Image (cartoon, rainbow, N blue to C red; front, top):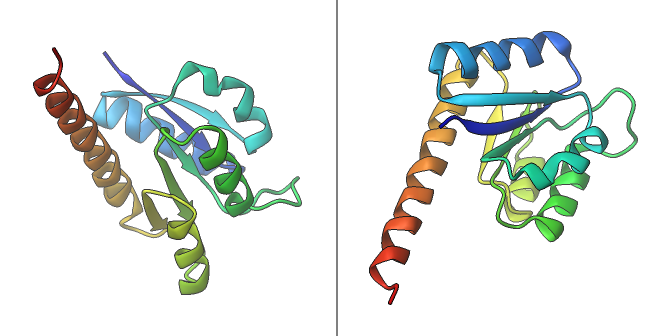
Length: 137
């Protein structure tokens, strides 16, 4: 069964590149792309495996950090990967303190880091399920 991943990215080229990479190259993910978080929020009831969240959005006054904070409060169990062009340690620290599982800067190796982050989330989920099964009565 493919894992559902939401990608919130306002750059259509980036959206398509990520979607093709995860759906076709990796094959184990179903990707839904949204140009801003407001469009994605009504779909969270579909329980995505992970959310990849950009920092800036063309038509929004809020940043990805604002939405990360909101998502952590309302949907604490959904892993969020922060995916940005920013190379700012202050923002990175705020993002990680706000509950992102990973901060990934967009560059030539970011697809590999995204895949590694998703693999890590999968591994953590598998371990939770394994240990939870040990203690069931």
